Length: 358
Image 1 (cartoon, helix red, strand yellow):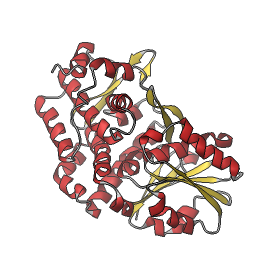
Image 2 (cartoon, helix red, strand yellow):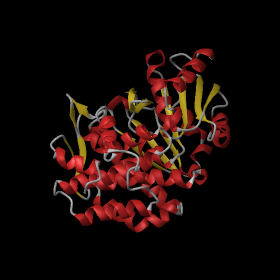
Image 3 (cartoon, helix red, strand yellow):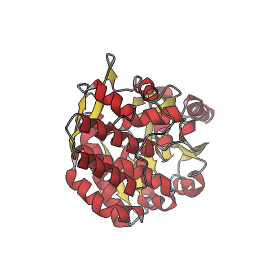
């Protein structure tokens, strides 16, 4: 087992990474406060791993909320199911919530924990690669709205993140690739050496070789922890973690949540960010081609939906969280491994990218 620490002063917490961690109950119970727990999971994950959570918490008063599976259910209606259960079991401020599942479960459980009785503790137990390397770390929680993704939420840090890499053995191939998109992101924004490693080890990741997956998860979490520790509430550098997300969120919202997986939309969004960076003369054509090919090797889409117009993109991008005082900010690349947050981009170049006029 490897352990990272996200340094946030008195709200710091560990990130445990290893095989078979769900069979080590002390990892979970060490971070439970109070005598009652509520596990939130979904219809896909609960039959596989809820029993292990129940066994670990056998000395606690416990119950579970099983949600429908999918991004389409990441909304206020589904969130209300969690609140209803918490009220029915008379959960109090000492109750600990356990998020067992992917990013949708983690984001909604975290938001419920942030808002139930104005804040209770929760623990992240991610079971998808994307959740392991991104959404379970950093305290961003929330739900989607038909007009924008993740526009309703709160910052609320977990007590711990427990990453059992064994759970990836049951992950669908498409979900694995979606997670690899977020792994590639870290190389593109701040770690060219990691990008080179990913290029050399893509086949090993797709084959789910344990050493390759563990290294990719550890390195990704290390980057996420460093960035969040320096900018917890995304007032500056944390926005770099959203490379490709402004374009990607527009795809998810326009196509209907769940039609494109988050990582798939982010992959295409990163290519669009690379294309705009090339229009700004920061990247060369060879850099854009390299990014496209690396994502394609991960079995990810690299072109936006043909039914989406440039106007569609602008409509959804205009309600992105990185819009400040009416000004859209984007994460672009100065080079492979170096990114910036900027509102100072060529508007005509953006139109060329969005309207596919390159």
